[in-house]
Length: 140
Image 1 (cartoon, rainbow, N blue to C red):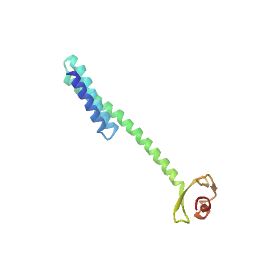
Image 2: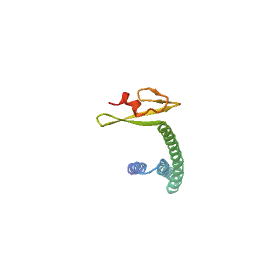
Image 3: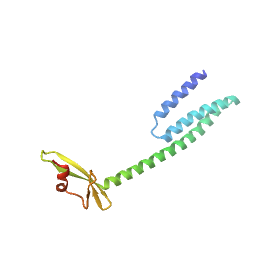
Image 4: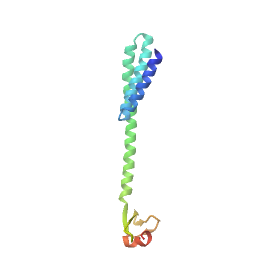
Protein backbone atom coordinates (compact mmCIF):
# COMPACT_ATOMS: atom_id res chain seq x y z
CA UNK A 1 0.00 0.00 0.00
CA UNK A 2 2.81 2.42 0.88
CA UNK A 3 4.46 1.75 -2.49
CA UNK A 4 1.20 2.60 -4.29
CA UNK A 5 0.87 5.88 -2.37
CA UNK A 6 4.50 6.78 -3.07
CA UNK A 7 4.12 5.97 -6.76
CA UNK A 8 0.90 8.00 -6.88
CA UNK A 9 2.62 11.01 -5.32
CA UNK A 10 5.49 10.79 -7.81
CA UNK A 11 3.12 10.62 -10.78
CA UNK A 12 1.10 13.53 -9.37
CA UNK A 13 4.25 15.65 -8.93
CA UNK A 14 5.36 14.99 -12.52
CA UNK A 15 1.93 15.92 -13.90
CA UNK A 16 1.73 19.04 -11.77
CA UNK A 17 5.25 20.20 -12.60
CA UNK A 18 4.66 19.99 -16.34
CA UNK A 19 1.26 21.70 -16.35
CA UNK A 20 2.02 25.05 -14.68
CA UNK A 21 2.80 28.28 -16.49
CA UNK A 22 5.22 29.73 -13.94
CA UNK A 23 7.80 28.46 -11.54
CA UNK A 24 5.83 30.11 -8.71
CA UNK A 25 2.76 28.02 -9.47
CA UNK A 26 4.78 24.88 -10.00
CA UNK A 27 6.63 25.47 -6.72
CA UNK A 28 3.37 26.02 -4.85
CA UNK A 29 1.85 22.83 -6.17
CA UNK A 30 4.94 20.70 -5.66
CA UNK A 31 5.47 22.19 -2.21
CA UNK A 32 1.86 21.43 -1.30
CA UNK A 33 2.13 17.82 -2.43
CA UNK A 34 5.47 17.22 -0.73
CA UNK A 35 4.37 19.08 2.40
CA UNK A 36 1.10 17.15 2.59
CA UNK A 37 2.92 13.86 2.20
CA UNK A 38 5.50 14.73 4.80
CA UNK A 39 2.86 16.14 7.16
CA UNK A 40 0.74 12.99 6.82
CA UNK A 41 3.71 10.77 7.63
CA UNK A 42 4.69 12.84 10.66
CA UNK A 43 1.06 13.25 11.75
CA UNK A 44 0.42 9.53 11.40
CA UNK A 45 2.98 8.83 14.12
CA UNK A 46 1.04 11.01 16.54
CA UNK A 47 -2.38 9.85 15.38
CA UNK A 48 -3.22 13.04 13.45
CA UNK A 49 -2.41 12.18 9.83
CA UNK A 50 -5.13 14.41 8.31
CA UNK A 51 -4.15 17.47 10.33
CA UNK A 52 -0.48 16.85 9.55
CA UNK A 53 -1.25 16.61 5.83
CA UNK A 54 -3.21 19.86 5.88
CA UNK A 55 -0.56 21.76 7.82
CA UNK A 56 2.28 20.32 5.74
CA UNK A 57 0.46 21.05 2.49
CA UNK A 58 -0.17 24.66 3.47
CA UNK A 59 3.39 25.30 4.61
CA UNK A 60 4.86 23.48 1.62
CA UNK A 61 2.67 25.41 -0.79
CA UNK A 62 3.68 28.75 0.67
CA UNK A 63 7.36 27.84 0.69
CA UNK A 64 7.24 26.43 -2.83
CA UNK A 65 5.51 29.54 -4.15
CA UNK A 66 8.05 31.88 -2.56
CA UNK A 67 11.01 29.97 -4.02
CA UNK A 68 9.41 29.57 -7.46
CA UNK A 69 8.34 33.21 -7.60
CA UNK A 70 11.90 34.37 -6.90
CA UNK A 71 13.09 32.14 -9.75
CA UNK A 72 10.49 33.77 -12.04
CA UNK A 73 11.70 37.24 -11.06
CA UNK A 74 15.31 36.31 -11.81
CA UNK A 75 14.32 34.96 -15.24
CA UNK A 76 12.32 38.10 -16.04
CA UNK A 77 15.25 40.33 -15.07
CA UNK A 78 17.65 38.33 -17.25
CA UNK A 79 15.27 38.48 -20.22
CA UNK A 80 14.86 42.24 -19.84
CA UNK A 81 18.62 42.80 -19.83
CA UNK A 82 19.00 40.67 -22.97
CA UNK A 83 16.21 42.65 -24.69
CA UNK A 84 17.89 45.96 -23.81
CA UNK A 85 21.22 44.78 -25.21
CA UNK A 86 19.61 43.51 -28.42
CA UNK A 87 17.78 46.83 -28.91
CA UNK A 88 20.99 48.79 -28.30
CA UNK A 89 22.85 46.74 -30.89
CA UNK A 90 20.00 47.04 -33.40
CA UNK A 91 19.95 50.82 -32.95
CA UNK A 92 23.62 50.98 -33.94
CA UNK A 93 23.18 48.81 -37.05
CA UNK A 94 22.22 49.71 -40.61
CA UNK A 95 21.70 47.47 -43.62
CA UNK A 96 22.74 48.79 -47.04
CA UNK A 97 21.35 46.76 -49.96
CA UNK A 98 23.69 46.34 -52.91
CA UNK A 99 21.86 45.81 -56.23
CA UNK A 100 23.98 43.40 -58.26
CA UNK A 101 24.30 43.18 -62.06
CA UNK A 102 22.33 39.90 -62.16
CA UNK A 103 19.33 41.47 -60.37
CA UNK A 104 20.06 39.98 -56.95
CA UNK A 105 20.51 42.03 -53.80
CA UNK A 106 23.35 41.65 -51.28
CA UNK A 107 22.52 43.07 -47.84
CA UNK A 108 25.57 44.56 -46.11
CA UNK A 109 25.31 45.11 -42.34
CA UNK A 110 27.14 48.22 -41.14
CA UNK A 111 27.63 48.86 -37.40
CA UNK A 112 28.18 52.24 -35.84
CA UNK A 113 30.86 52.23 -33.15
CA UNK A 114 31.48 55.63 -31.65
CA UNK A 115 31.84 58.08 -34.54
CA UNK A 116 32.85 55.40 -37.06
CA UNK A 117 30.92 52.96 -39.24
CA UNK A 118 32.39 49.43 -39.48
CA UNK A 119 31.73 47.07 -42.40
CA UNK A 120 31.53 43.26 -42.21
CA UNK A 121 35.20 42.88 -43.16
CA UNK A 122 36.34 45.40 -40.55
CA UNK A 123 36.72 48.35 -42.92
CA UNK A 124 35.97 51.77 -41.42
CA UNK A 125 33.99 54.68 -42.80
CA UNK A 126 33.68 58.21 -41.37
CA UNK A 127 29.96 58.29 -42.25
CA UNK A 128 27.37 55.66 -43.11
CA UNK A 129 28.55 54.30 -46.48
CA UNK A 130 26.32 54.43 -49.53
CA UNK A 131 25.52 51.62 -51.95
CA UNK A 132 27.99 53.14 -54.44
CA UNK A 133 30.80 53.02 -51.84
CA UNK A 134 30.07 49.41 -50.87
CA UNK A 135 29.38 48.00 -54.36
CA UNK A 136 33.07 47.56 -55.37
CA UNK A 137 33.68 45.51 -52.21
CA UNK A 138 30.41 43.53 -51.76
CA UNK A 139 28.61 43.70 -55.11
CA UNK A 140 29.07 41.92 -58.41
